[in-house]
Image (cartoon, one colour):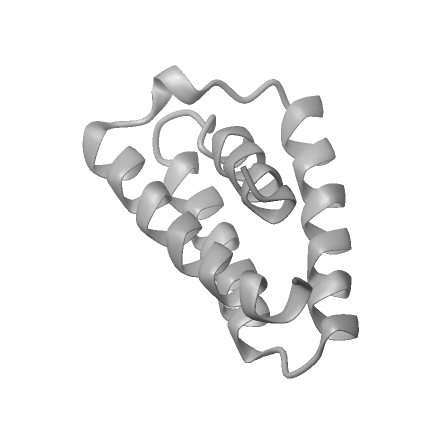
Length: 94
């Protein structure tokens, strides 16, 4: 598995752990990381987004988020975002 894929799978799992209505807000945050990554034009930008995501991932872990609290629709959306984000990252971080 590509290193970026691992990062985004982990990030997806971490962010996907929010409870109830909070999950939608967390999904929205993850969507913003995807947008940032896909807007990047060079490796430096992509690495910056990757660093931001790592910090965000730490925050989610500290808040004790649980993946099991997501609905099936939320899990599906997480996978879609993660796939798009990974595709954009792969273009810049190879």
